[in-house]
Image (cartoon, rainbow, N blue to C red):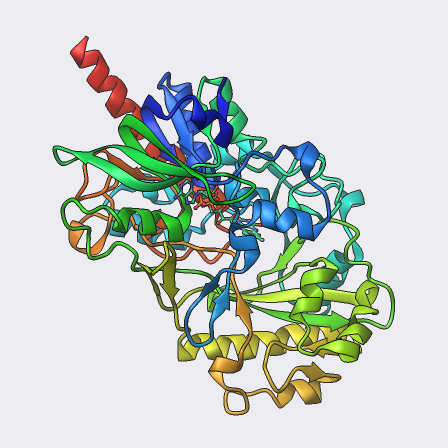
Length: 510
Ligand SMILES: Cc1cc2nc3c(=O)[nH]c(=O)nc-3n(C[C@H](O)[C@H](O)[C@H](O)COP(=O)(O)OP(=O)(O)OC[C@H]3O[C@@H](n4cnc5c(N)ncnc54)[C@H](O)[C@@H]3O)c2cc1C
């Protein structure tokens, strides 16, 4: 038996392994795979449930509560508040992500090498890890028959305006373009951690304790030696079973919000002042375009390409078709007005302006067992959103759109560029821009010195031996591109170094 559920903890409440890994997302599963393959006994502790490919379907009311934390209702506080989403299931957020597979750019990695003082995190050190990750998740371009008209409109629109549009590498093997990425890939084509790194770890002997939330670390003689978790009854969410999991090392990979939340809760010693700071999130603003012809954006892959013309300004454009339910929720009106637009769902194309962070936020422990995340965009971000939305609007009108819904309260409708030009940093208020995010990073950053980082270049907490981090929290700075490949590369690095250390210690003791 290697996969445990709530009911199993009635019989067995105490576990031991060489390494305990909290979280099975991009980072946790990758670290677990290399540790288990090195011959170490690995146990994953995963708050969410195990949902195989055969269970995935397009029904949001069933899929969202099952796969998303708090049914996707989570938000970052700030001006403006920013809703965010993360996965809570075996495979973590990779199960619900779009599959884009980009390497962190070299200019970012040059900075990381300087900040960590470790060439392994520079362009040369990361290149072989990226290649390994890309092989693991089968990062490649889509087959032409899986591309939809929303993809073509974005790509051709960029070309028409003379802008650079790049075809995305995606984590996929025979993706047929069902466009169900955000509710779990029903064919198993998307190479999420559920179908790539987790099976590797399990084949190498790892165990996975699902439906178990790690609530505190066990610290003995100044070392982290395990976690205590609670498993709620998955039906009632009421009856809890406490489970103890001990190990020679603990790797926390609960994502950039729940990793600092868990680590901040450890009462022994004083946690780093940096822990929870440096929160980064690549905020996004959406532009919904309506065309006078059917686009049927739900047919074909989500995001075949990205407009990268403005990457030097930290701005990307991409299409991101969403199902009718969130599309309806994103409409700025109610009742008939909203219904009239939804009736044009087949003519709709949802696109986004992604802005690279120019500031940082902070995660702290809030009441009722919940993290509090605070992030305020800067004046420069505000300018870039206004400018980015204008440029993206230009693309849509150049391609024949007859109406846009813009992300600015009070100035939602644009029927021409004249309407769009009314949007300026003086006519919209910063708190009235509608943002969201799906990239959470940076809250337990790697670094060369404890004064300005949380973990050392091995991924170990400066102030808690035996405790490691292997997820998006490690990012010293934002990457400006989709982060999963970089998260996995860092997790391979942390996992391998930890394996060498534990196996070396074992060999010396023998
Ligand atoms: C809709 C959407 C689309 C995206 N598209 C892309 C894309 O195209 N390309 C890309 O590169 N990135 C994309 N991302 C982002 C990417 O998936 C994430 O950045 C990445 O998965 C984060 O990895 P992680 O290891 O930090 O955390 P996660 O993958 O979120 O894994 C964290 C895991 O820890 C578990 N956990 C949390 N707290 C606890 C606890 N206390 N105890 C036990 N378990 C716990 C969670 O349940 C989860 O399984 C997208 C994200 C979303 C939401």
